[in-house]
Image (cartoon, rainbow, N blue to C red; front, side, top):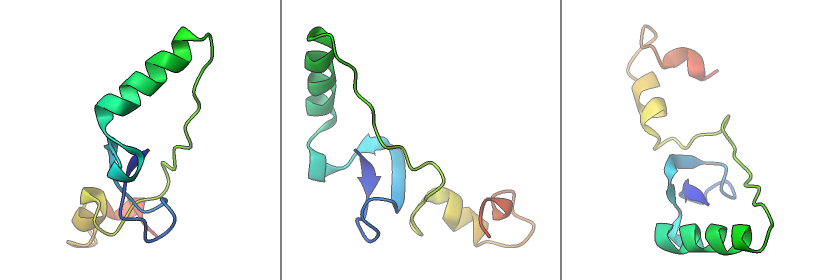
Length: 75
């Protein structure tokens, strides 16, 4: 439910902290998780930590030069 521009089926993450509007609002997400927990169940999210969009701030920083601290994040 992370923010993605959906160019790569959601694996092109722009922001790991925001809910993609495709899946609703952050408040709706919080309510869904609470309802699931209230029913004694857990939620597992697919978290593609090793994927970022070309719009992600880390990627944008990496483009600034070979000596940039984010450059090693990308091959």
